[in-house]
Image 1: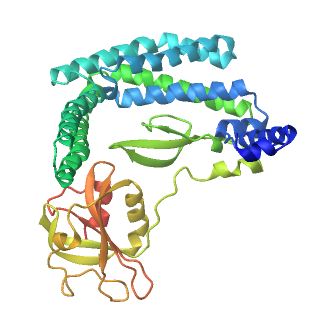
Image 2 (image 1 turned 90 degrees about the vertical axis):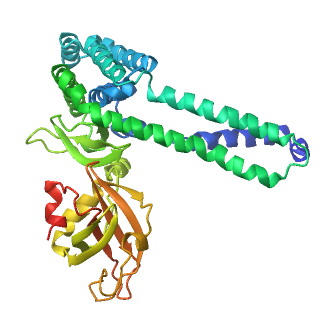
Length: 415
């Protein structure tokens, strides 16, 4: 205790301590579930029931869409399945809807199907040379690389008269090499998944459809429960890896590690008026992700000639009438920095072959992004410095004249 605290009366110190504790309690952030529970007067066990069912629906949906992510991960599967079986065991004590859900779970043999799909996926992976999970490979690789480097650096530190600057390159290697190797392993894993995903689905189509139908049973059960509790359905936002379910409204989509993830709210039954949302919950009506906004004056580099990311010639075309479609394309894309700078991409950029603002000013391109549309098609996005007239300049282009343009995007890229 400090000298100042020693000089204070015991009652004053006690009062200050209570005040500090009170402040800590007041600053505890409430979860969305707690906010909904308090605002709508819902029992905590009802909120927990909804959260448990949403958890197992998301797990099963992820499992059937990305089964290969679960190979050789026995402990993870055990944890997921324990929560699944715990939640199902409580259904016997619920209402008729819950009892029916439990019957569906047993009739469809959900537990057995998960185990069967995992075994089949592991057999497929073993036939392709994959013997361990990607997580285990990453941990082993990190240990193999970092341990010798660390020992080497520690040993060098004991060498007398060693120039400290000599250690800097080794430290850089120590920091960068594990990340580079990790990135390489992950890219190979993503490629393996992409190449074998269809085979997993083809071999297990019937079982996958059964599991998806049970996911739909869970989601319908949750929706019924929310309606019984008068919960505004717009407040319950959740992500899934498939769009194959009924009674849901898609509100957004994102690419996560090369995989599309969809975000939904429940739809009201036909003819039913939405429940009013209390003032204290208005904040949860906001979009789950704000969509990227771009200007309407898009330039598309049509008649492009070039390959391997290098553009030799093009014809700039203003496609302001397609602004909505181009915005949607951008919102459905993942972005990464281009390894080439703008001068390397368009080496002959000039007044004779340039990108122009609507006012006629030659654009000064300051940023280049590689966009990956739905993990199917890559293209360039060029962003120019704001023009003197106040307009922002954006241009898009294919990266190779031989690129196969998806049918949905042909109107944008083809003149």
